[in-house]
Image (tube, rainbow, N blue to C red; front, side):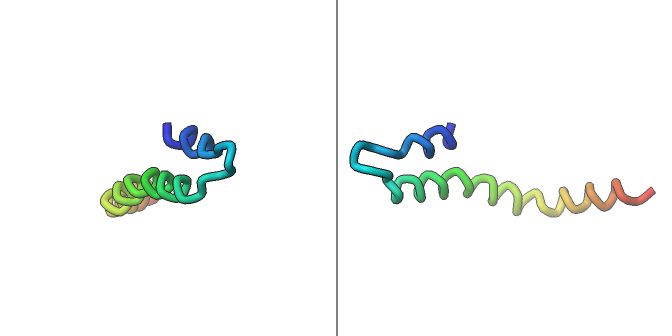
Length: 52
């Protein structure tokens, strides 16, 4: 999985920060896209559950 891959981005020469940044961006982007698409449905469900 991506978190394990991110944690393993160290080598004998040190931490590869550019790789960590690229992998973190790749890990977060799909979650942000899904969250933005589903935002309307999430808010609708939360407000429907709050009204009796």
